[in-house]
Length: 388
Image (cartoon, rainbow, N blue to C red; front, top):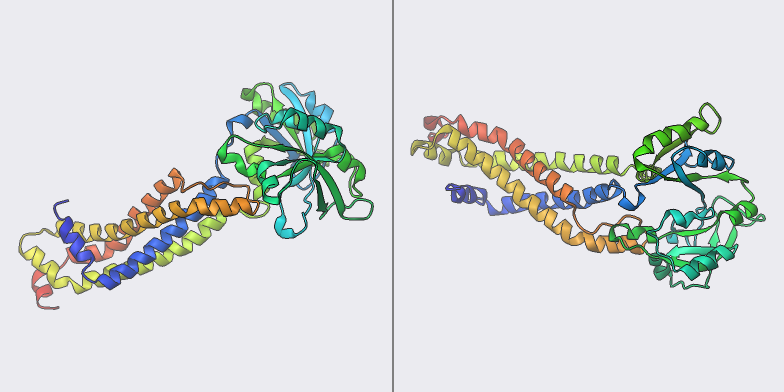
């Protein structure tokens, strides 16, 4: 630390060049902080409340349906406490921009989700109304819905009586206490029986089954037993945790991890070239000064460490500033995402992102400073002072 003033003075010897390079590093890590927070949020661990739930879906694709007769067979598997089912609907409210998840659910579906707080009288009203629907509080607030309102949806997959027009009566609004799961409040659910009877496309087919376990320690055995029921049939199943199922569903639209990795790979490659050029030019301009340092007693190793420290300081300063800006912006981005129907909450830059970001800063700083530092270490004092 006693040479920090030397490192700082060398770093800002050319203030304009350093500032422009620093801004490039800030922009790169701002982008990294925001994108990696999205990736971490999508891959976040499952809720403790759902640890005892499994999802049974088609092995081919979650868009493939399963026969309803599997309900009784799955319920008979040892270790299964309860089975409910659901079908994706995919209706649009007024405009495609208003898209939100909506699906048909079987009887007692909400008994598997005690964390969904629904007033008892509203739940009973939903059960008693064939065309009733339940929505999350965030979705109801976004569209100004209240209990008793009629909600029209345009079917994108399942017509009814030759028309895409479906309508539901809002009978209940649920809330979640866990802030990290507030995105789940942007969904609508209605009766599977109504869907099954009214749609013109499929009959007695299930999109996926939800299974409540009697003992979460038996999850693996139960999953294997359920999949064995349909083995070698035309409707083989894949039973997995609720978290894995949700991630697979999201990946139908995009592989978030792959997208983030590809973008950041391109950004950091460009950053390597830019900062590497900056450091190479900075050392080239200071060759006489470095020779003087060696003349007054600095060892070759000390000169090497000074240049490396300068490179690392440049990247770390910009990287920390970029991540700090990303952390400040993420709550606003999360609010916009929720308002547009987003299912993933992004409260701030996650600790995992900070750790990865710091590791990247150190790695990039060492890589871009390595060649200029080696050149400085190998300087011949006489040749350097002579301008050769």
